[in-house]
Each structure stands twice: as structure tokens, then as C-alpha cells.
Image (cartoon, rainbow, N blue to C red; front, side, top):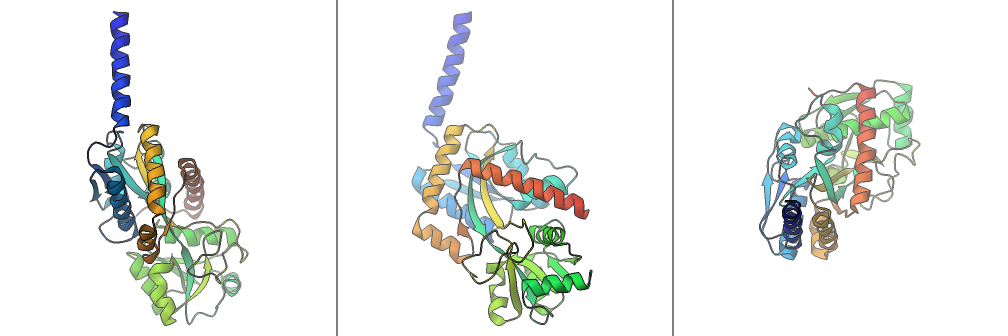
Length: 320
């Protein structure tokens, strides 16, 4: 009996190894938590096309929008950990939702394992052209001189362009007032039209307003200056420490997916993102190719989860 059991276990192990060796042998699905259009969808389709081309299997991009990302994330978390269902995550689903909501139908940390980061989209602080400050230093002085006077727009409660200004306010000892809008476009339009004083937005989405002179760029939220606006200082350079965030996308797999599959996908994605045409497609949409090791992706998620948890708790932010 023991010999039979050992033989059965060996057969299962061998079968699993064989299944991994011939991966993929059927279509792969990437679940996306947003509707078609936008950077997350573009990143998914661009990587999907690259994986299909290099691995010789169809890659299906399936948009399951709604529920603050819960629908797609939950479906991905509950999928078989065999490499055939992947999830295109971003800051909200992977690092903000765990602290913003009292209860989520998925565990952003325990239910997923990292594959690779995909894109990075820089964020900038902009002010309306008629604001009484034209530089980051002047903004800080104005905000400290009249606490509560300066207003900022966001795409909604708990979005990245809500938490980034709150982070800036915490680190810079500022009192600024949040005015939430329903989406990124209305939030950007609000600062361009003068409904609010400032906003933290992506460079690509705000470029028309920058070019028209309706907004002035004050600072970036990243740790280093960005290529689209190399003369713009970082918030850290301007005297507000620790700020380092951006809009990023990253591919995840259900927890328990074999390392051999994850490592193969990681190296393949790095090759795809190095392709000139892929880089051009992403860059023209305002998203820089952003490959990483799985370990570096893990470290980034840990850092951001801790940081956003602190911001949400300190500012008393809750989902509405």
C-alpha cells in the first residue's frame, strides 16, 4: 500500500511538472478591473498581444469593470492557480482598497502573487493659471499662511489623486480642502476652469491644459524628475519629504501559481516591454514601460500598502 501511495504521489508530481513544462497549452485570460480605454486597459492589451506573439497562444483581455475593482479582482483571486487567469492590478485594487474598505471580497496580499509591473505614469501637481502661486515653494507658503483656503480636486474618495495630496498635506504640515469629482476628467477640468485651486493628475491627461496655459505645473510626486517635464522639481526637492507615488499597473496571478510559470512570464514581459514598438505605444499614451523583478514588485506593494494605510487612517478617509 505504501508503495502504491508513493507511486501515486510521484505520478501527481510528475503530472504537475509536465503541465508546467508545456505551459501555456491553451488561451490565457487577463482580467481588467476597468472598462475599455485608459492606461490599465491599454497596458493589458499591449502585454496580451506580446504574450500571445511570444508564447504562441491566444491571450484574452476581459474587462470586468465596477465595484471599485472588486468584480475583476475577486474573479482572479478565485481562479485556479495555473497561470491561465491573470489580473491587471493598479494602486486602487492592490494597495488602497485593503485600507479604504472595512471588508473586501478578496485579500489583496494573500490571494495574489506578483508577476511583473507593466507601466508607470507620472503624477504632477498643477494649479489654476490664476492662482496666487506659480511655484511649489509659493504654493507651500500660501497654504501655510491661510490654512483651509486652498482646494483640490480628485477623481473621487479614496482614489490615488485623493490620497497623494493628503500624503503631501501630512508630510508638509498643510491644511487643504478636498473637493471630490466623479472621475479623472472632471477633476482635471475643475482645476483648469478655476473651480478648485490645485489637483494631482497624470501628466498625459493634463497636457492639453498645460499647453493651453490653463494650468501651471508645480511639482511631481515621484522621487525623481520626469522625462515629459524635466524642469519640474519633485515634491521632495521642494521641501516635502518622502513623497514617491505614481499611477502604475502590474500583472498578478492567483496565489499558489507555480514559480516556474511566474518566472517565465516575468522574463517574457521584460522582453516585450523592451520592444521599441511596444515602448512607443505605451509612451505615446503617457505610460512608460516599467518592468521589474517579482521581488521588487513585492517590495513596492508592501511599501505602498503601509503608506496608504497610514494616510487613510490619519486623514480619517472612508469609502462612501
